[in-house]
Length: 254
Image 1 (cartoon, one colour):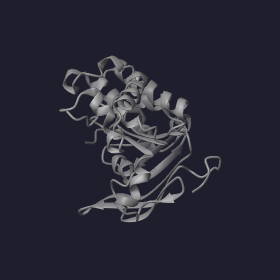
Image 2 (cartoon, helix red, strand yellow):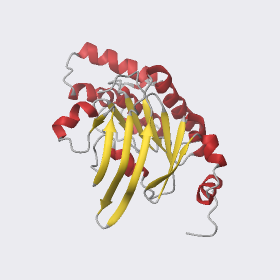
Image 3 (cartoon, helix red, strand yellow):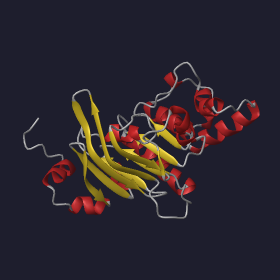
């Protein structure tokens, strides 16, 4: 495995292809994300963003191509071999995916319990620290049903971060949230990067968020990355489809 000081991408996808049934979703995705960078994935619905994201922790396996995490090729790993890799990758699902039958504190503690931690004092200390980071320590006893959408996303983020992963994957973290809740999530993503040097990929349709949090942007269309660069370079890109996306311009097509 490479040392943290080299310039090897932490996340490296090469010619990744994936079909689901008769539909080819990914048609040769190339994507590299440097250590400590935040990469935003943009593109229209059905372009392959979420499917790309799920290949990184091995939730989906490519039909062909390579997926490397910190220099390790994971595409052919067994579930057992993947376990230590997955412990280094936090995943914030689009809907938060909290357990409705567990309290906020129990939800956040879940990854620690799964990892074998049983000491109540240690669990309480780490859960409180994680919830404090997202500004929700006082809600530790509440149930998910008693929280707003933005609060549930923040609890899910605390759960994903409690093991201090080297990498965070966010699938539409601000979908369905009001502008204030969206801004709070954006600030948390930046805080994770600044405080822990977390390597992140964020799937979003929110251009304001993308502009705020992205070190680099990749644009997916038709199962391929058709652009990779800074947000400023994206805005200057002459590609007509990208410009239509940035301006919300449909040209009358459905």
